[in-house]
Image (cartoon, rainbow, N blue to C red; front, side, top):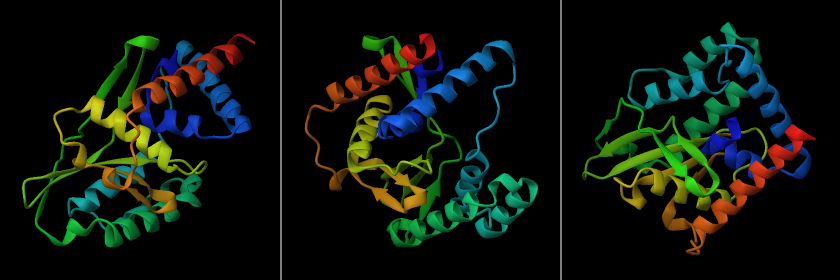
Length: 219
């Protein structure tokens, strides 16, 4: 059951969608779950190639504009959204990631983790981070949110930060950033008002998604 082992990005996307889009996303997930059960081919990630190139750009080994053009030529399905992603990321890099003007070291490894949710018999995957160590010894662990709709709201970032902190306790809470590339949104923990009830809210939203998934599957 894929929704019981879900990427944080996907969980946030489903949670903050309207009812119609929630239903559509979950029905798609149910179809894909059935297809995975009968085939070894799990398909590809539309955003994966772009994010791989963006991380290479941060590391200094990629011309992101040129590489985006190459990606589009190899797959016309990328023609509409990849330029939006490229421009959005470059704007964020120039305007928000101020530390780019200071010496930093790119982490080539993908910092990832699995946050078990025993209360629900489920787990949330944290993957595809971009991470650097800054000149002062601090870290930046950047988690990307990809979704054409909905945009990631501040409450989504707030619950996303809680999941990141829980899954990666070896890093300081201030190390983390969440970016919504298509909206050029950049979230810092210092700019989020936390309530102290993030765990209960997170469990509640995740349980609601699991319950709806089951109803749609069995309905």
